Every structure is written in structure tokens, then in C-alpha cells.
Image 1 (cartoon, rainbow, N blue to C red):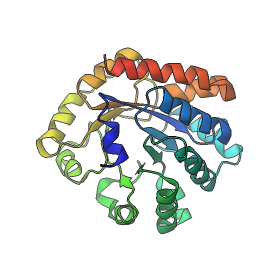
Image 2 (image 1 turned 60 degrees about the horizontal axis):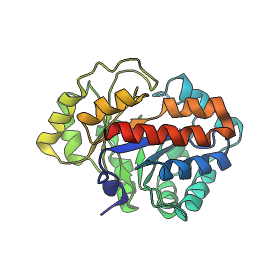
Image 3 (image 1 turned 60 degrees about the vertical axis):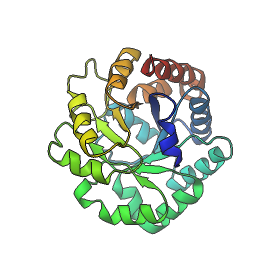
Image 4 (image 1 turned 90 degrees about the vertical axis):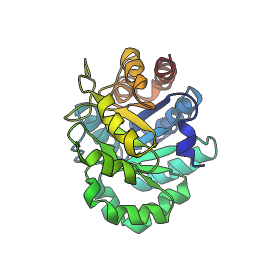
Length: 257
């Protein structure tokens, strides 16, 4: 059984996101290990990119800080190798296609696999155009995580049938970021998935507080939180480990309440 599948065996999965290299590589490493120790079932690491079209201002600014500090894809491969010697928590990269393409598909997935990456999310590559990446990621045993959104409609079942690892269910239209209320009927999206697949479904975009985590976990297999964590890191810099640890613990508990 893959590490990703195991992540959904411990109740509702809590999946935190952070931007690699923000505020620096050493702090990113400490944060990943602290998240794993405090209840994170799977961790998303963002590869910083200069034009992250799906991200709101909080994650955009984190990308800018990481790039300004000189964080590279190779730095993140090395980081994952070090983390892998200390934890078995599943790790997935969240990246745009440009960094993968410019690195070279074959070389990227070979290095990702050797470092210990379990999956990858590429939000700017539509499912219908993903075959070129999927064939290479599959060769190296890295799950290509599909996304579905409220607008996916009749495509949902087709995407679910081909899904690997887990399905990332986007709760809201627009870019990432904290939202006061999540008004989409995410349960309806997940019902469509359940008709054709038993793949785990995790909900992301907009979740930031324990109440939202609890509500979204009722209709899914897990919750994903990014901007709220990246904001904590931006406020506390390399002092953020303690705050992020207690936040992760609280959110994991809320998802499983």
C-alpha cells in the first residue's frame, strides 16, 4: 500500500501546505517535521514559482520571498531527502508546469522519486492535457493528483476514474485564500466521485478554522489547509514552528471531532 493511501487510514486526513524555502530551507525542514509530529497525515510542499496563477496574495508573497532567498527545485529535492530519513509522512509537491518543464519531465520525476516524493499536483495542467506528465510520473511511481472543482460537472466522473493517490476537491471558485464562508455544495461533487471510484477525496481552498475543518470533513475523507498556515509562517518567520505545530494539532482534532 502506498504512503498516500495510508494517510487516509487514520480517521479524517489533515493535509497542511507550506511554500518550500519560506522563510528559508532550514525552517521549512523544521516545519515539515513538526507538522508530521503534530498530526499531519500528508504534507504538501509548494515549489516557489514567479507566476502562481491559482494562488491568492498570501501564497504569492511566500513564493516571492522564497525565490528572493534563492530557493531552487534542487534545494527542495535535497530537503525532501533529509526529511525522508526522519519521517514516513507522505510528501507531495504542488507546482506549476513551468518549473517541471524547464527542469525536464524525465529528470524531474526521477529526482522526485529518488528523493522520496509520493505525489504531485500541477494545477495549471487540465486533466485532458495531463497524459504527457502522467506517463512519466507513473514510470517513477509518483502519483499525479487530479483536481476537481464546482465547475467540473460532467467531467468529475471521468477525472475520478483515472485518479491516483487522492482527489483534490476545490471548495470554491477563484484563487487560494482564507474564506469567511464556504458556500459550494462540495458534498454533491464528492457524491459524483463515489459513483465511480472509492478514491479518497480531500477538500481544499478557503479552509482556515476548526469549524470549517470539521464541517468539510463530514462530507469528505480529509481537509487541506494552505493560506492560513502560510500566513502564520509569514507573521512569525523562523519562529513559526511552535505556532504551526499547535495549529496543525487543533485542525487535525477538529477534522476528526
